[in-house]
Each structure stands twice: as C-alpha cells, then as structure tokens.
Image 1 (cartoon, rainbow, N blue to C red):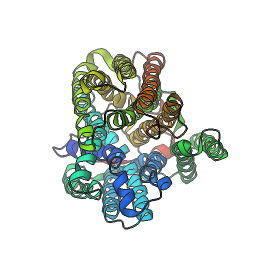
Image 2 (image 1 turned 180 degrees about the vertical axis):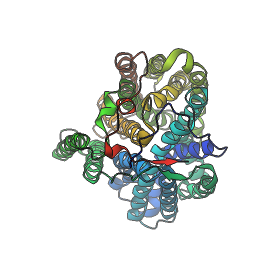
Image 3 (image 1 turned 135 degrees about the horizontal axis):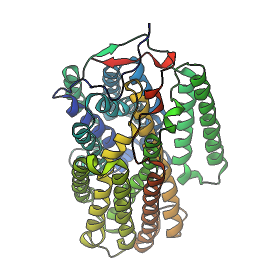
Image 4 (image 1 turned 180 degrees about the horizontal axis):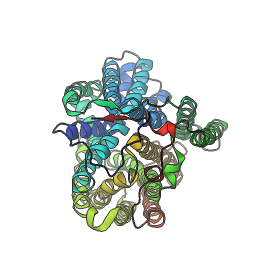
Length: 500
C-alpha cells in the first residue's frame, strides 16, 4: 500500500534547537570553499609545483563536481533520507578537506577538491529542503530562509577574507584543514539536531539514466565554460564541449518526460517548472548568480591589481558587503509576509543592479576605497540580501514534501550554473575592454584593467535588471500549490523518505 507525500501545507515537525545552526553551517561551508582557495592559489602552485596552466583546476575541479552532482544530491535526499544524505555529505567533504590539506602533489590536491565538490553537492540541497519541511510557512520560515541566504553570501565573502588571513599567517594548507574541525562539530550536532529519517513507503528506485545524463550534461557545460579563458569561445574544444552538453541535457529532458508519463519517478519532474513561482525563482537565481559571482571576482581583482591591496586588506574590504547582506536579509524577513516574494525579488534585483552600475562608474585607476568600493558594495549587497528569503520561498512554494530535495537541487544547480556562465562571459567582456588577449590581470596597466572591470560590472548590472524583469513577468501575483501537490501522485512519486 502506498502513502502520498505530505502536503506542503501540513504542519511540519517542530525544529529542534540545533537544526538551524547545522543547516547554516552547511550553507556557509559550501560557499566558503568556492572562494577561500582563490587567494591561496599562488602559494599552492609554488609549493606543490603546479604548471601555470593547471593551477586553475584547484578551483575548477570543485565547481565541476559541485555543479554536475547537485541535481543527484537533491533527489537522493528525497529517496534515501535527508539526515543520511547530510551525514554522508559531511563525511565526504571533511575527508576530502583533510586529504587536500595534506596533499603532496598537484594531482592529489585537484582530486581532493573534486571530491570536496561532490560532498558539497550532497549537502547544499538538503539544507533548503529541511528548512522547507521543518519551518512553518510564515515568519519562522522567512527568518530561517533569511539566515540561510545570508550564511551563503557571508561564506563567499568571508572565504576571500579568511583565505588571505590564513595564507599570510598560517600557510595555504590551513584553508583546506580549517574545514575538518567545523565538519566534526557539525556531524556531532547532526546526530541530535537533525530528525531521524522515517520511510513512509517503499521508495522508488533512483532514476539512473537521468542521473547519468544530467551529471554528464551539467559537468560538460561547466567544463566548457571554465575553459573559455584558455581555449576561447570559438575554439573546437569549447564548441564541441558545449555542444555535447546541449545534447546530453536535451536527452535528459526526454528521459525525464518519459519517466513522468510512465510513472517511474524521474530525477527532475519537469512539471515543477510549470509552477510559476518555481520557474521564476530558478530564472532569477540563474541571472542573479551570473552577475553576483562575477562581481565578487572582479571586485577582488580590482582591489589587488589596481588598488594594490594585499590579500588580508583585500579580504577586509569585503566586510561592508557582509553588512549589507545582513541588513537586506533583515528587511526581507520582516516584509516578505506583507509585500510578497515577487515584489521583494524585483526590488532587490533592481537595487543590486544599481550597486553594480555604480561600480561600473566608480572603478578607476586612481580610485579609493571610500569613493570606488564602499558605496557600491553597500547598495549591491543590500539588494542581494533582500533576495534570499523570497528566492528560497518561491523555489519551494507549493512543492510536496517528497520533492523538496528535487526543488532544492534544481535551485542550487541554477545558481551554480549561473555563476559559471556569468564568470565565463564577463571575463571575456573584461578582456575585450582591456584590449589584452591574455585576459584581466595579465599585461595591461591599472587604467586598462579598471576599464575592463567597469565593463564587466556594467554587464552584471544588466543581468540583475533582467532577473528583476523576468520575475515581474513570470511570477504569479499569488502562490498556488505546485501541480503535484493538488493532483494524485503517480506510483513512483508515492514513496518518500521523511523525517519524523
């Protein structure tokens, strides 16, 4: 006998005192490790003997595994249990951090970063899924989503600052090893803080064909994008890789649609994207991340290559951004119930765009922190901070409890792919504006570099305007249940693993 997934409107199990701290630690760690190694790269390269062309794989290996496995990680949480997936993710992430910190060769470090990304892909979707299941809609969930979003943004900013401090004072290995004690504490807290998994029926088998296709497709897409700075957009390598990604992802959609029709429990039920809040949230996440991740990158380059800041000072310059994100999150938490997700996403997107546009006008060779960085940072981060609460709420709006991992994996994949696409495109924009074939930071003087960075910030602003416009058009004025929440579930969707 089957049991259907819990309704999204049913009363969720009350969260324990350690649940939210564990989930915030997950989001912070995942974002931290996307940026913490950047400033340590030169020391890693000289100590382990990296060839110049292979050093970027310390970053790319993490991004590739993380982006490629997010959809699989989210669905596994639905099928085998969220606490089980979380614990395994922590174990993989912590072990990879330890191996990376002790690495004795470039190959060992790159492999450790790839495994670390795989662990992060198991962790990230679970955090949002558990918030959706265990925090009742309204003020409690808005507060949890606000802290979830802020912890991710802070992790990215703190990663830059911590990377500089740890590399300067302790050495590059510390940027990997620092994860180990954090993971151990989080694992201990998970035993009592995360409710045990409880199966409500015989869970469907994993959609193996879909998992292989989406992992290969998204990995090929990220791989093609991260190599554009080396191979160029028109090269046979780039065109071939992106074409392969398109074919694989198209095949994934065909397989998933067939799985829906034959009740086989697809990895991604494409019907979710017919629900307007879910669709608009993923489009917004894709476009916002395209601008936001690249803006982080170019702000760091501007501080170090043009303003001649050292690693520690450059990291400290991101503190106003952290403050703005926190302030924006507080505003969203207090107002989302009154003004709604759509209005907050549009307002936050436009405010973030205004901050990036200010950056485009302010960055110059003779710029100062007060004149070129402080004001734009505060405006952009305030707008971005306002988006996290409504973004998480819209992405899981009306989604059945047995599909929250699926929806969370989709949102995280949209954010990761958006960041990869945006960075690849904006690096090309900045390179063209500097007039140097080697890209930002190689060859041109401060004036040319500032001109290139300004062009990139201008495109980032346009991307956030696009995100706001897309939300205004796609997001319905009212949130209705997603299709699966109001129609009888197919047999393959009727077995879920729920927390007690």
